[in-house]
Image (cartoon, rainbow, N blue to C red; front, side, top):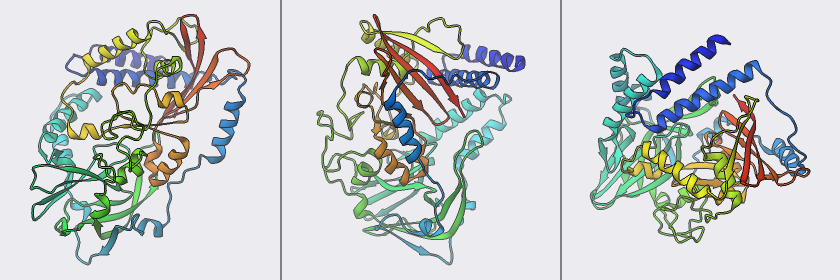
Amino acid sequence: MRNWVDRLLAITKTALHLKFTTTYIIKKYILKQILTLFFSLLYIFSAAQDQEICNCEALKKARDSSRKTDSYHYKITRKQALTPPFKFISIQYLKRFSRSENIIDSLETKIASAASKVLSDSLLGNYKVRDSIKKIEFAKQYGDIPWPLIVKTGKFNNTIAILYQTDSFFNVKYYLRISMDNGETWKNYYTGMEKNNNYFFKSNSQFPLWKNSHHLQIEADIVRMTRPLTFPHGGPEYETLKNNALVVINIDEIIKDSDGDGLNDLEEKMELFTNPHSKDTDNDGVSDSEDNNPKYKTIDNDFTKALLAAIYGEYDLINNPDPLTIEFIVNLKTFKEDFASQRERYNSYSNNDKKSFLDRLQYDVIVTDDDNLRRADTLGKKIIFLTSKEFSKYVQQSFSNLYVPVYSKLFKCDDKKDTYILIHSGVSRGETYVITRVPEGWNIKVINHWIT
């Protein structure tokens, strides 16, 4: 235990002395990993708290229900993997075809070359190398898309198409960027497809991207998952079922945008769960494509403040002899000013560069049935709030969609006045919050932690 503590102290000292050239986000991430490791060590050498917080029948019923229904399977049959997911997709099998193992990832090659010349093998040193090379390569763009993300481009008369993938970790999605005026203006379309679910599109495809004015074509491996991403064991594993597929895509269905809000119907139905026939799903006066919370109007009340403070706040901790307990006070009278100063401090250290086109595509997904949380201020981030029912549908589309944070309803204790329970289950960790009204506003206590 002593050796682990010494290592933690050394890492913490390094993190706290990072130069300001390293962004606040990186520093916060590293410190968060330190705290995560610290709590995981405490769990190794201490018993986790698992006491009954209070009597809450609604919470018990919710837990019983989730045990019966939360069953998601990554394994699919060979037939399912080989069957096109949409009617606008057809598959041909080639006798002569490109091989995915011959694809050269120029970005990773350059990163590996640069990393080999760096003396330090530290996490931070390697991160800086990767970050700097990536910025250089991502600055090289076509149609606002960084070249490392482009799978294939093609031109048919004056219409240009770019098939590209998102810069994501868990679920890399395929999009189309199309210009019908020779590159003067562009529109963006979600294809409904995701890398390795069940297609891996080949950037070395020998076929032109355009088959005709209504169809695109791209060579692909057809794969299926044999082992999902697990913590701490590693990334997902796949088997190749067919390595000679030519995927033919009728783009007429993909480019449908029934309400003209700049989001194609496929994206609204499959990813955002917004109304494809309404430009402003929540009727708040902001178009779905521009709205940071397109499904729900923002409200402001004592409960939204408590939830924001629990999830995002940075407050002075109350002295507590229990090292597994985090506890702080949220003053409702000064909440607006306190939270504004936190955001201002965060923004001063964050990367304030102008957002790229791809940055505007990024959004978080949070699953919750709590109406106050769904309507809380998203603090300038785009967040798609899914109900548990919507989440079940979302996961059926792709097992990778499982890796999103889930927050329970704010459950009221039956036997304690003005006391509530909020449970968070993340990708690799979770917490139980006890939120109690006090004269100043709210007392928030994190009493249970779990880490995988």
